[in-house]
Length: 139
Image (tube, rainbow, N blue to C red; front, side):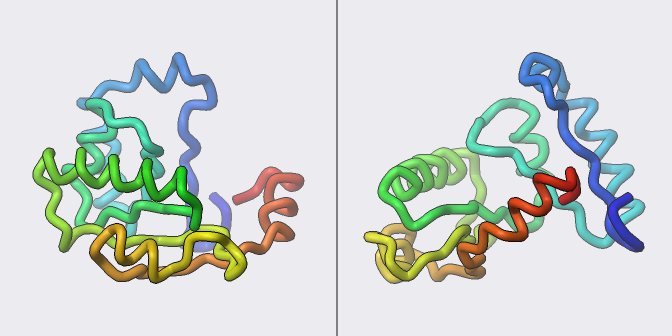
């Protein structure tokens, strides 16, 4: 419980244990969370596996979080191709740029052109709050 009306359930800290999470477990967690909260956010990372597919299948909106860099552009496009092949329509996708810095070699316009959609949200590069959250162990 982080604050009033805001809870965080951390994922498995051990990658081996996270690999043991079954799709049926996530189905139950999703059903319970959806009954208790207005919004449920899952960070599924870049891995496509049965567990992440369950979460994506139950998502109304999918937010790929990208940086303005060539590696993120390439990885993001590959992920979008996989999502498209799994039947996730473009209307469900909203691009998010994380750690935005106007001095990056890839611009927002280039990212929008590469993905064929507008950027929905931009999170500025601001290391202070991230450092503070990490130091305090709080999101």
